[in-house]
Image (tube, rainbow, N blue to C red):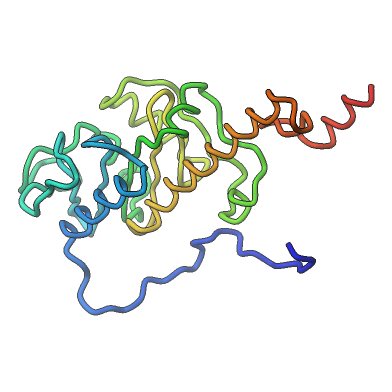
Amino acid sequence: MWGVSVERPPSLFAGVQEPDAGPPPDPRRELIGAARELCARGLTVSSLGNASVRAGSRIWITPTRVVAAELEDAQIVALDLSGARRGGGVPSCELPLHLEIYRRWPRTGAVVHTHSPCAVAWSHRGLALSHPTEELRYHGLSCIPCAAPAPAATAELARAAAEALRHGPVALLASHGVVARAASLRHAIELCALAEQQARIEWLLLVVAALGDGPSAARPGVHPQAARGAAQT
C-alpha cells in the first residue's frame, strides 16, 4: 500500500510471546473480562457464546445462561480434562466442543465461541469465508472454513468443529456461529473478531455485486481475472 512493499509474517500471532508480567492471571477474572468484551464488541449477546482457558490439567469455562454483566468469580466453572467439575457453577452446554478441541490440540490455551451477526448469517449458507482480503492474508489464512451442520451442544458438533479447525485456528459452525482456538484468550477473541470482519466484507461485496455498482469480481469466490474474462466473452 502507498507504493511500499511490506513483508508480512506468515501469521499475525506467529512467534508472539506474552509479556512477563509476574504471576499468571486468575482464569476466572480473565474469562469474566472476556465475556464482557465479547458483548461490548458485538461478537455475542445476552448469555450466548462461551469461552474457556486451560492451564495444565485444569480447564475453566464460562457458565451456562449467565449474562456477561452478571458474571461472578464463583460462577466460573473449573473442570479436569475429562470434563469432571471441580468447582463453580454449571458449565456452558457447549463444554463438549471445548473438551474436544483441547483433546485434539493439547497446546491450545483458550477456546472462544461467538454468535456475531454477520458470521452467523454467513454460516447459514454453509460456505467458507474465502474471498481474498487483506484481513485473511495478514493473518496467514487462505479462508475461514465452515464446519458440517450438527446440533448445538452435542458431541457431533464438537467433532464437526474439530474437523474444520484442522484447516486453521478459526471456523464457522454451520447455522450457528464461530469458534476459535489459540494459545491465549486474547488471540482467540481476535480470531473470532476476524471472522466477523471477513463475513461483513463478504456480505458487502455481495450487495455491491447485486446492485450492479461494481464488477462481478466483487462476488465472493469470483477471481478478478476470471470475471474480466467472462465479461469479454
